[in-house]
Amino acid sequence: MWVIVGVVAIVATITNLCMYKSGKDYKLAMAMGLSFTALTLCAEYSLVSEWVKVEDWAALLDVVPGMERALWVFTIVSILLNIAPIILERKAKK
Image (cartoon, rainbow, N blue to C red; front, side):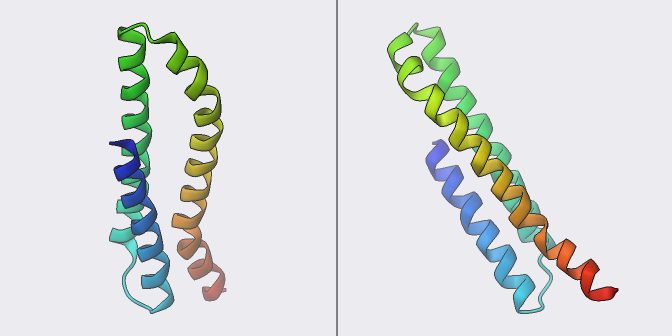
């Protein structure tokens, strides 16, 4: 599930940037990109929670260390890309 929500977050972020570049209102796409990024994190947390409930320590040991770094990077990049139009718009006004 987290993969699907993550892909939607990436598509929404790309839509956000394309809409800004074409001069259209991008704020809904920006909100969707950030929202789906948050949902991706929640879905991943739910997956890890299920592994803890069934005591699947092997899955936790294999997946969590690598995914932790990946999710940090994904979240930071998503935030930066989604707020980039706002920053660029403010610089253009000056």
